[in-house]
Length: 224
Image 1 (tube, rainbow, N blue to C red):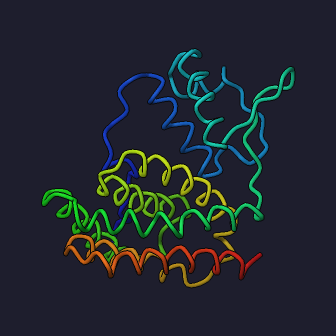
Image 2: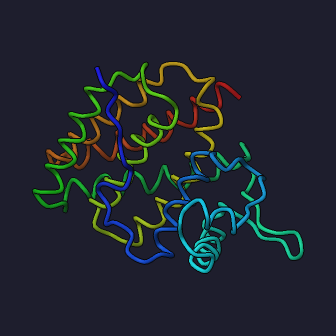
């Protein structure tokens, strides 16, 4: 069976400006660890590889500083931030409150078309052969689910906040994924969550989202 690939931005509007395109592309490189933690970032090389001018790339890097994905030092340059396992507790403390809120809002307020898209996404995930997927594809499916739920929640401020912290969590996930077992369970949890939202089961999905975040933290800590 051909592996199914996912674009985490399919349920999001496509970037329009060059700076937005650069931001989305560099963000992906950082959270998937294609730019390793603490690696120097050459804006000229990024500009050439992305086919986007240096000015939009530099604008994107400034935005990514606010996301805690890059850090800039005077006279030293710009670097990918470190991935620090001690940050996991802080990130989880926020997500365990906000992920259930987003899931509940999505179940209560998302329109019919959005819920149909989430139900279709659940079907696609259920059909995945997780054992055949590489790290990048697994992570992109995970991102696609979470970002789809955030958008379905219909609160742009909540969406922006959750994307930021889920991105940071994903970097930690990528770092330890090769050591983790039973990843299929983590992926499978998405199916029930998405279908619950599609069916408008607000209380159920709030509980599932909370359990998902707690389970994620426990799984990471079990291999560190």
